[in-house]
Amino acid sequence: MRHEPAGGQRPSYFSFAQPLAYRGPGFTPTAQEPFAYRHYDKSRMVMGKTMEQQLRFAVCYWHSFGWGGTDPFGDATFQRPWHAAGDPMEQAVAKADVAFELFRTVDAPFFTFHDRDVAPEGATLAESNANLRRIGDVFAKKMQDTGIKLLWGTANLFSHRRYMAGAATNPDPAVFTYAAGQVKSVLELTHQLGGDNYVLWGGREGYETLLNTDLKRELAQLGRFLNLVVEHKHKIGFKGQILIEPKPAEPTKHQYDYDVATVFGFLREHGLEREVKVNIEQNHALLAGHTFEHEIALAHALGIFGSLDMNRGDEQLGWDTDQFPNSLPQLALALYEVLKGGGMGLGGLNFDAKLRRQSIDPDDLVWAHATAMDLCARGLLVAEQMLQDGALQRHVQARYAGWDEDGGQAILRGERSLEELASDVDARGLDPQPRSAQQERLEHLVNSYL
Ligand code: XUL
Ligand code: CO
Image 1 (cartoon, helix red, strand yellow):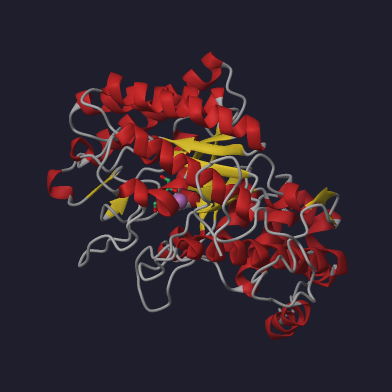
Image 2: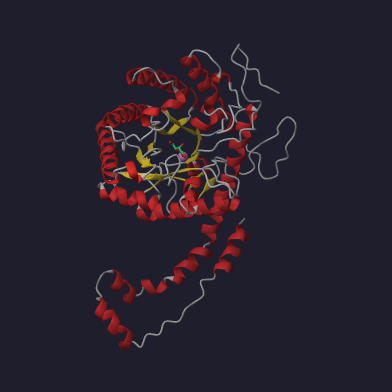
């Protein structure tokens, strides 16, 4: 049943009451209330913060409102009203109305966008930027009315054909310049809207073949571009985080921001390891041959953990399927690493996830986000239990205990040469005995928390 608001307002796009309520684990669906949160109790305290503060959920604009449901073999399936012919700015406003309705319905406190998701491209960069500013004003008003905040903004430097050979890494400096103009505009809007982060995903910052590519030059260009962004951030007083989103490939065959480790090396090379952090996406981690939790743990260890893009891949398909997360063990292990590392900070859980193209009912957008949010909340509670119980951490501490003793500490402080260590073997009659790492026992332990 659609809700018809009083006062001649636009009818709701979704059939759910807004916002969706928390009813606890015992909730039973009814025809009137087919969904309620069983686990996402946003004011519940988890490790010293509310669930809302720990999880910082965000809905992304591009998959949920921009994408029409196309695939390489088929046309758009969703046929959203704002995708129909009409004045592009009016359609952009209609899209914003529905977007904010979804944020409110699922009770997500944040959203994320690319410039081209929210406002149409004009004939010139100045016209495109003016369109963006007009939608920025619409956002500012809606954000004030609803309390919904911006987790991050970003510039689309990969869809238009001018970017087919990259943006910052393009062989033509005019394209670099154009991209700089686009990023300046979105960074400033992100700042004005009070965004907590600005993201750079290098979609086409890579190459198709080395036969036509000067890899060394392209890396230097990318480093220069990132330095310009950081300089401008400080110039305008933006206090949020600048984040790079690693991905190994797709759309290009090889992307320079391959994974967390590669990005860290790149940041060090350009003196930016204290200025830029990472936005880690689950499906990108898988494509790089890692787990999500590996990338999170590494980013925390290197001091560059920034934020998360939530989705999942497909075990049979080797590309970025961007499905909504639905595996409790995966979420629990990822959120365990987040909590262990000190929490989300200014980052959040952004659903960079898209519906399957047969999910054409408007309400499928609500189901997808709300069920994923509820599962993340459940994953957070499992992660909290894993930490509070402490059995896993005790095992790891015991495993490395030798390094906390004097001998181990002296090695780490650089007080032992290779010669001294070699003679130590004889002097102390060392004969180290292997100990079990107990993986199966620990895996059983994790399952007992689920
Ligand atoms: C693409 C991807 C992007 C970034 C933002 O795989 O994840 O949507 O999150 O540009
Ligand atoms: Co992403």
